[in-house]
Length: 233
Image (cartoon, rainbow, N blue to C red; front, top):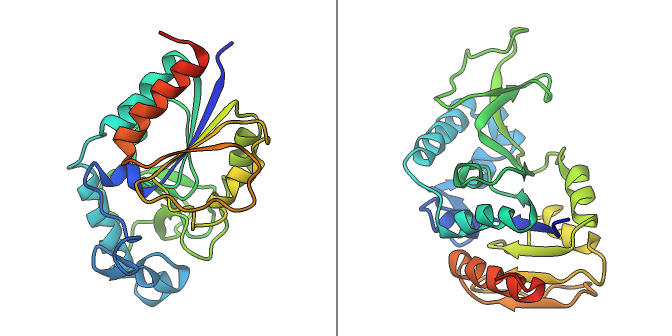
């Protein structure tokens, strides 16, 4: 039976494909205050701005490709039972070939009803005011905004609790509840932390192996370490 590798990914892995993040730019995301475009309050204040913002992000996503980090994680499915828990809303893991991907913060290429969050539709193109669900309610981006619950969290915890290996890639470990997932690993579970600017991980009993590299280089080193431990040639 394959060992279970659970991977928590963040903005750092997508950044190498050209998707801009806001963690390194004073809270601005593509020139916008995240409170204007990524909160329920922002939606109520200026729906048109929010829709336009995500329409542009959707178009940007079509112009980028998965990078080496995404591809190696997909290839690791040949030797491990790989489960990816991502904070990213892009589809780069899926396009690279990963088959078990859980999106904590929603998906850019989906929309949902403003009245029923379980009514979710695939939506690869622009979304406008007047685009309605089957019951006549406005559709919104299927994104977990700041201040909203994270519906996939319980599933993420269940996946994490059964990990034989746990890796954190390209995330600042500052955004909760995602950052708290690491605390659900068993103390004997090896943890690998890949980030060019790693921070100290508080309240963690596991042995953490830090790989201070960008995501693509770090994932390549992670593969070597896992193969070494499992003696895979």
